[in-house]
Length: 325
Image (cartoon, rainbow, N blue to C red; front, side):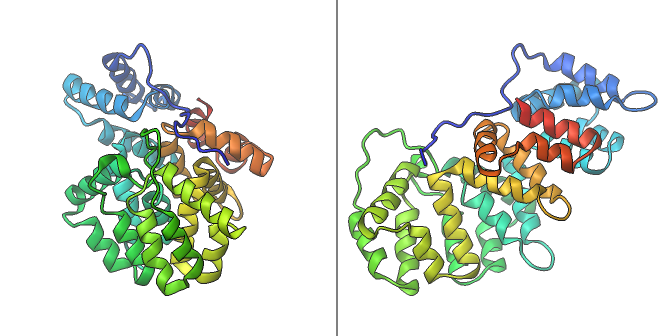
């Protein structure tokens, strides 16, 4: 599993980009009788999140109206959910997803893991900030209130960015040579059991960057002859196990991890639309082309084919536009 440090997005900035013209097209698409969904998709699915924010700003200036409110009043169902997700600044969107995962009865641990265990240090900073502004509450405090035990320790630890901004959990390190003081940590891991393993795993995961963690994991394999996720599987159960295995998968093959998450959202009875919308809108600007490639290798079908089979109408058209690139 090679480390892909620079992902290949399916949605890239539009060049040339004329936010005023885009705002006009959207206004026309929503004016009068009926809505021109095709025009809305052709503009918004071919722009990055930052460009969509510019279009919204221009829309406000030109028409004195809130683009998101207008879209909400014109659209409905899953298509509306998808378009609103696309229009929301990414850190705020992910903050809302975290909040939703903790809200109500029962916590959706998988969503917490998917977002927090794959975020770079810079992402974590931005998400925390957006979360605090939106909910008037700290992300750590809410995580601590909704989770427990080792899983709580892991998530709370990850949700606090490390002081060195280039050392986020999955931040690609650009610092050529990697100095490792990890051999001792690895030897500890090999000889320890659940209670001792957690603090050591924290110590290994918390301050290190992507390539360093990959190095730690491969050294573990060299020294023991089995992958660390096997040891995690033996020593842990429940949420903490899922969280640690997710980190392991993300470090070794992030597109592979998201391919599995994406497959899970369209597989089985009914589509898990919230997860599908989240993964497609979020990863389309980061590594969707890598995810699609791995998806084909893993499941012998394409992301497009699965969306085609599971979704319909403008919702389907818009998802396809985002993943096609």
